[in-house]
Image (tube, rainbow, N blue to C red; front, side, top):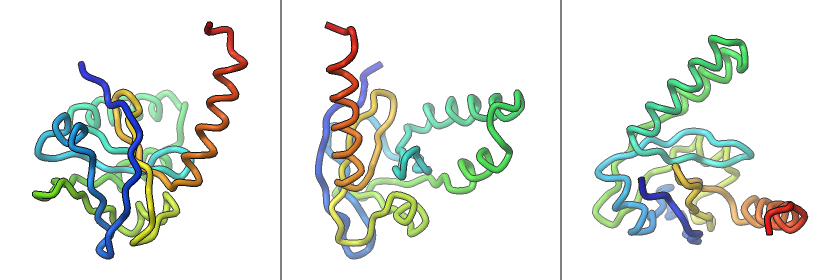
Length: 141
C-alpha cells in the first residue's frame, strides 16, 4: 500500500476550508474521514483505514486500555468529508479549535504513513525539532 509522505504548508480560507495536496487527494478517493488527532492535530483517514482504526480503538476500550470517553470523543468528532473540485476539505469549528487553527491561519498538512495529519505551523515545528533530536540520538545509523 502506498504511504502518505511529505510536508505541505496550506492556508485555511475564510470558510474554514483547506486544500489537500494533489498527491494525497489521489490516494483518498472521493471521500475521507476527519477526526481529532494526538497533540492538537486533525487526522485524515481513508474510509478503509478509519474502519481499521475504529475497530482497534473499540478493542482497546473493551480491554480497558482506553476510556469510554476517549472512544466516544473519537467517534463523535469524526466526520466524513468530500473534497470539492479544488481539493478543499472543510474543517469544522470543533476540529479547528482542537488543532488551534482559525480561518485564514496557515496550517501544515503532512503524511504520517497510513494517514494524513493537519496541525498548526508551531505544533509541527516543535514536533519536528523533537523528532530530529530523538532521531539523531538513536542508534539508527
